[in-house]
Length: 116
Length: 115
Image: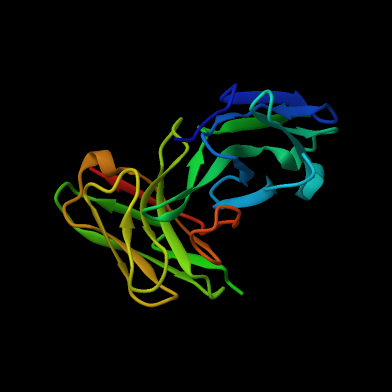
């Protein structure tokens, strides 16, 4: 079975500071990992995903994440926070399930606040 | 393209009432999903449809039914609403279904309150 943990339900950073959102996963099969962002009162949209190949993945809006198998981690970073980055961020692991195909297991989410 | 659309955006029900949440996608995707989002719990899968005419239970199916009306539409029905079903409901779709690397595309959500 897959599971995802996100350290810190709420993270605050100053505008221009480094953003680091942590994600650790457990999976009995090679994981496919995703980061989604949810802006207030909106649905989720994909930031980036790791499937195979290069372990450093670049996404939209300047975000990137690195898959580290030895640490079972997929932390999300951005060098310089912008006010518009304030949102909730979800890490997810995807697995194929025999009964019903693809199943996402989402972490509980981390709310990012950006202070002026 | 509108992507994934959901109606209604907000709904308040009394315990025991029924209602249907509607979802449609215009991306010609094969798979569609219903999730619920509760504070501190992320999103949990309620039901899944790999293709037109098929549906399967997810992690939290009790109290819900679904219909895959056609390739575009996937509805979620609450037959007898309970306060525990107060949540935000998201519909999503993905292109191929059963492919773990596929991206899921989400609708804007329906905020449901059951009194």
